Image 1 (tube, rainbow, N blue to C red):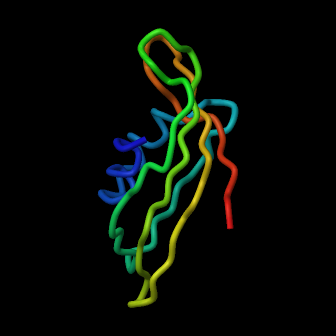
Image 2 (cartoon, rainbow, N blue to C red):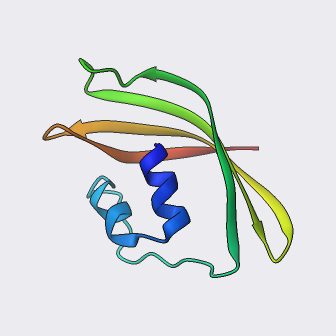
Image 3 (cartoon, helix red, strand yellow):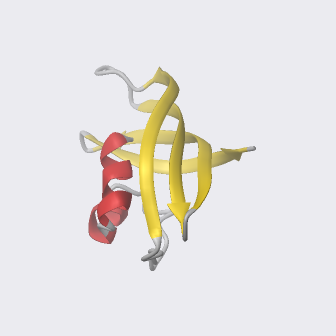
Length: 94
């Protein structure tokens, strides 16, 4: 989760695509050049340990666009493919 957050901060689309489940991966990613990421807080996890094949991460990421603050609160599902964790899907929370 933290590495994907960093990829969003750096606008590293290749890394994001590489860590996205192929069946849900978007064909194109676009980034807002005015978006300034402010921080990531992991609120909780389930599974996702060394011996697990799936995991869930609840997080809040804060950012600003044109000086206005926003937050992205999501519960994300991950799975391990060939020893690598990949993002499967997420549920946005309000």
